[in-house]
Amino acid sequence: MRLIRFLRSEPVRVVLRTLTAAGGGFLLSIGRVSGVASPLAAALAGICPPLYAFAILCGTLAAFAVSGAPEDMQFLICCLTAIVCCRILFREVQKPSVLSVMTAFCCVAGGVVLDLVLTQGKRLPLYILEALLTGIAAYFIGDAGQCLHERRRIRLRAGRSFTFAVCYLLGITALCGLDTDFCNLGRAVGTAATLLCARQLRQHGGTLCGALTSCGVALCSVKLGMPVLFLPVTAMLMGYLSGLPNALFIPAFFLMEGLSSAVLDSSMELYRIAVELVIACTLYGLCSHVELFRFIAPEEPDSRSDPAQRDLFLGTMLRELEEETDAVMQRLTMPEPESIAEQLRQRMCSNCGKYEECWRLRGAVTERAFLRIGHAPYYRPLPQTIGNCVRYEELSGAAAECARTTALFEMQRVHLMQDRSTMLEYLQLLQSVVGDHAAQDRQVLCAAETRLLLRLLARLSVKAESACVRQLDSGRYTAEI
Image (cartoon, rainbow, N blue to C red):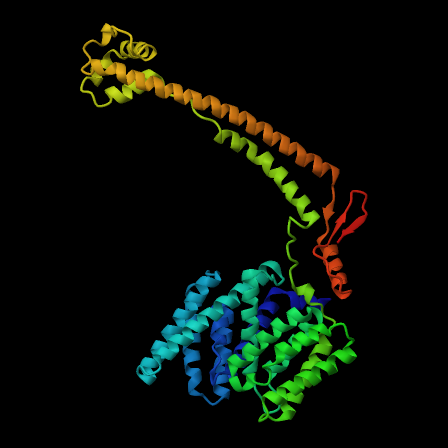
């Protein structure tokens, strides 16, 4: 217990993360992608805090010294130096989009400095292209990391699934850079992951994982990608055979993948293929008990097909109706119209030169006269109290128009009040219907039990459009498939 508490303390966790970042920077820098140093170390440093970015830089410097100071790592070191300085200055930035742009600009700056000092403009376009690709990789890695930090699970939705697919592809590419004389680590790990997906996620998951593995290996080197070109096809076939026990499942995969790899790349030594397949099958055997559904966030059920989600939707609607009824009633309220005297004053007297005389000195008399005109606009003669008005002859027509406008406004106001009453009755009726439904069917959706039911159905090869487990008021559970 003391050891666990010691390892969980914040200083120890920071030290372990720093050492992991340094080791990751060392391994990523040693690996080669398309014959050059892998830029993934710069992408990781761009989305990490300043301390871990500096640790990645230290690991890269160690790899630079161990490898004999190769020229292709000079660009990576310049990029990492610029990224560490930028992260120290802007340590509060956390958005993946902003971090990716900063990473790309830092890589461009490092490439410009290196090109001016050493190559004098010969490799600048290549450095700019690598900087853009590094920024894109940093965005996807940062987005995936943010999702895992928030959810602790992988969300297989439209945007997030693409993000995690790109991260998996980049991870396989980075591991493929660690190539030895007897095997390639990236191909072995990717083959094991594909076999695990074919076993648990069947043909769809196996085919997708196999395609991503093949693309990741080919991105590192076309020659390395040739033996795994048929890996998606093999994974699809193994998905159909996922019901077999491991004693038959593993030899079948070993035979099919070994034959396809040997046929596609006859120039490669067969023992490398055999060693990689043995490592992949061994990793699969060690990880076969791990359920992938534990790392995948459950999909949100469709309200049109899932009764439990429908009940949740109705309950949410009930709560929103109670909150929004007052707001709707306020929107359906029309203010009272201005008096005819006020309308005439604004229309006839606002720009008149005698405004001060008529409204400031004897405003009450003028207002009574305007009210009389408004009630009987065509009555003759007009009040003598406004006989000296310069627009005396135009008052009748203006008063008639204001009277028509006021009458129309009052009519609209009456209709709106009727609509408001109808809307209120409709909302109350809908609220009562939803309340009755919620009162008659008080059941609680159990997410954990639903996931267990889905796993059981998947193991039994039962196809169901929807499935949910709910708990009744009595404490009993009911499953609906």
